[in-house]
Length: 303
View 1: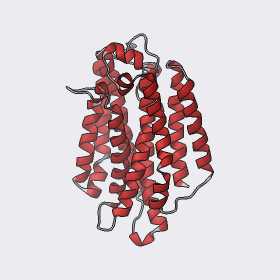
View 2 (view 1 turned 90 degrees about the horizontal axis):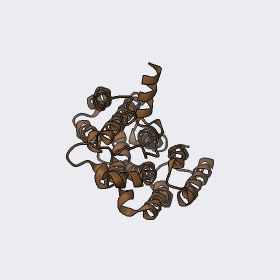
View 3 (view 1 turned 135 degrees about the vertical axis):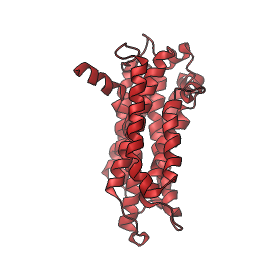
View 4 (view 1 turned 90 degrees about the vertical axis):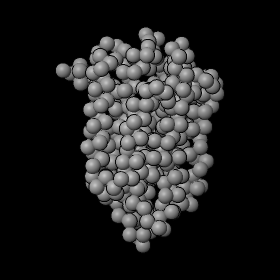
């Protein structure tokens, strides 16, 4: 039983989960800042809706990871040459069907957790949630899997950035005339969160580039080559800082605090490692550091 639970934990890919959590956190930060510094808007952060939002997003992300584990093994995209963390389907711990069923279970949980969100804001939540749930499978599955055609980064930018941040804001405040400012803020911070999430997938794809090229998985790293893929990952890190001037303009209560120093130092360290680290299992360390970098970036926005 312990081995089984450990396999499920590994398949959830905990190092990647901050991508979904941070996006919801960012949306809640935006609402809280407007509530605190622009009380005339009448906006109030609903902590119950925030909890259901983050749990639902986490379930969709975990489902995506389960589907990815099963489908990559079925397509022989995970081989004995793999440099990344152990995959439960390819290692034989679980059958592809069992892993897919776990993915379906987490999608079902996401649907149930979204019921309070639908009750709060109506059908637009379905317009956000249904495509998100579909692409949890379509990222690696279906007739035209995004990850196999070099569109993984675009998916992450949209769904772990713009959709998640703006969607969280919509759950909290809905839409009313005069809310253009808050949604402009959500757009900018959503792009920043999406770019930082793209670092995770780019590091993962740089590490697996040779294996993916040999199995027909045409990720962006495979298409660009090692050098350009590393340059792109570095751009994903730098761009959110370049756009902080716009964030400071739109986000009420934005201030420069000590967390920015920590985030910038860690971001700089990751940039250095992206230049020098070989494309092997040592890059797994960068996944954890990139997740921590996202957390520090949002913590700096929060304070």
